[in-house]
Picture 1 (cartoon, helix red, strand yellow):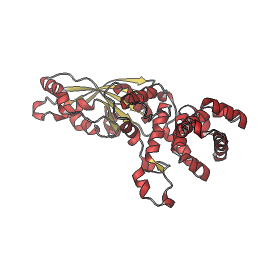
Picture 2: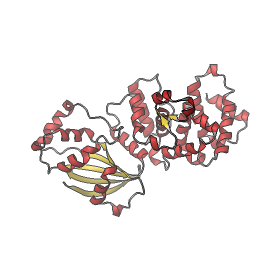
Picture 3: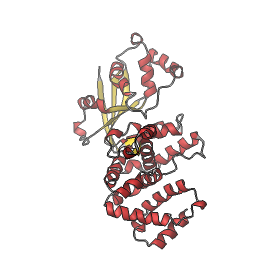
Picture 4: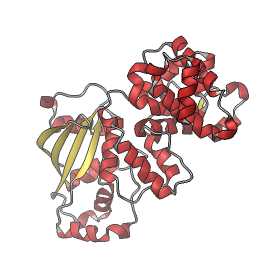
Length: 340
């Protein structure tokens, strides 16, 4: 088995090293194919019939288009001079296939006796310390292909990006939640956490609009993610979760964040203002939220769609929190009522 490193560049958008490498088919089958199912958000292999022509071409001796592999760095990013074929092989356990699952699946399906295992498969390898930015790159690579359902997309975008069992905010599924005793119900629905992440990376609360057909909803979400500047952010959604978890020690804030529309609206706003909000302590955040709730309670709910309006206004309020924190009750009511 062989891997050759040809070139190292730096991607300034997702702040990652971009390596041009080549591996032989034996390496691809032994080392890369197992990475296909590493994360749930990767696209499932299509039926073999779709790639029958590629299968025949590989056996004839074609050069397959490059695949893209991502290595997620858990600690400090390496210096350029530290990157070598040895480094790549050592960290391949932290890798997953960003683009090229169908090509690798097709290669793996071919009888080994019909393959020249020494032939080359060229790979682009991204070394990055942010799953958010890798997700952004995955969408730019795959956008335009047959979209997944809105429900499935919500689940897979974050399902394996976070180890929910290790998050400071505990989470359970809705089904498990129904089986718990009321006194045990201290955790946030896992689906709400996933929706919060989707709102964060898209900078939008319009992530599950039933008025839009699924195909167009998926396209809209992808476009919002690509235009949200998530790749240029220094923070991560995990930082937002860490901050919220410290706020949950307060009973009032705990109850407020457990309301799905509050959590989703807050998460969406953190795409742009987390650096300011994270400086607030529990008392400061609580006072700001109490002010919002006092104002929101003055809205005639018969004139609005309550759930959607709450989600939108939480986002609007926190996106402008530096300004609104100086407003009087009347000024804030005037601003929010005009935005509805």
